Length: 185
Image (cartoon, rainbow, N blue to C red; front, side, top):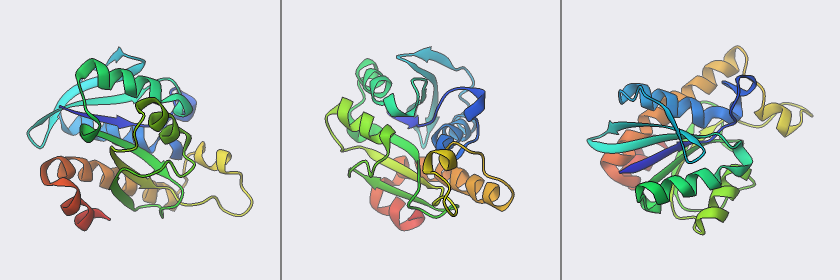
C-alpha cells in the first residue's frame, strides 16, 4: 500500500490557495482512483483507492501545514506504510508555476510541513512531488503569497502544476523514480 499525502491547511478560507496545492492534487488523484468516501482517521481526512494497480490511501492532514508530521506518522504506523511507500505532495516556491519536480529524500528547504514530517518520522527518505508556485511578486510577504488564491494566468499555471502532479503520482508508482524524473522533471 502507498500513502499519498497532500499538504495543506484545512478550512474554506484556505481552499485552492497556493499552499494547498497538495490538497488539490490529492483531490484530483482520489477522483481519478474512484475514492469517494472520505473519513477522519489519525488527524487526517483519508480515502482508499487504487493507482497503477496498487492500493493507495489518500490523506489530507487536518492539523494545519506546520504540524502535518503527527498525522503522517500516525497513518504510516496504523497502515504499516514504510517511508519508501510514502508520497508527499506540496507547494514549492523555488519551482516555476506550472512545473513540478519529483524526488526521493532531501531536506525540507524551509517548508514547515516537510520539516514536521522529517521530525516526526525521523527520516527524510520518502518521495516528494513538488508543485511549483513560484516566488511572490515585488515585496509581497511569502506568507501572504502562499495563503492567497492565484488569479487569472497564475490560476491556469497553478492548475497546470496540480494536474501534472496528479499525472506524476501514478506514473511514479508504476515506473519508479528515475523514469518519473525523466518524464516530469
